[in-house]
Image 1 (cartoon, one colour):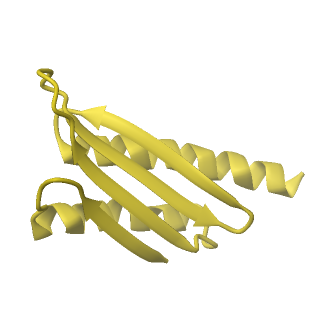
Image 2 (cartoon, helix red, strand yellow):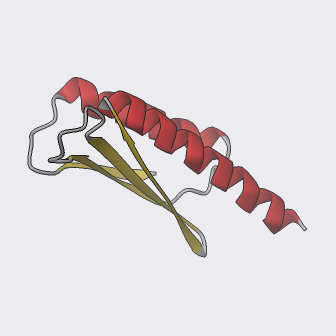
Length: 98
């Protein structure tokens, strides 16, 4: 899988990028035909403490799956977004088999 991580209006350190890469790579356990992925890490300019946004889009044959989560940390947001994508991938697999 070809994965690109983009940090919008800030520079992400290597540790955060590696964490996101490992989380998204685990999706291949559930579906091995993932073609590519795009991850956007953003900081919301609101006064809320949960201002870190992770948007993940993965391309699979015939479809694109997307998840966006907003939390207090990028790690938590990426983890929740990957969990949402895992559910979408499993649902797509069951529809394909029918």
